[in-house]
Length: 72
Image 1: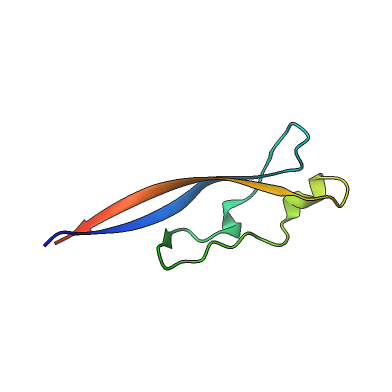
Image 2: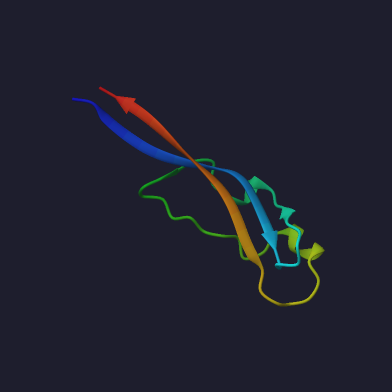
């Protein structure tokens, strides 16, 4: 019997205030691998937020890649 376990990694992460530019944030704010049982939590604060002026909403943009592992 072949079982496929799916997992995901975050390849890129950005924050934006919808002003036409995105600021890359460190991937150290996220887990290396996520599974179907993992909870994806966005950081409440990261140092890159200091580059965005004002206190309005900040949006996250994530690039997530699915990985498949097969076991017999």
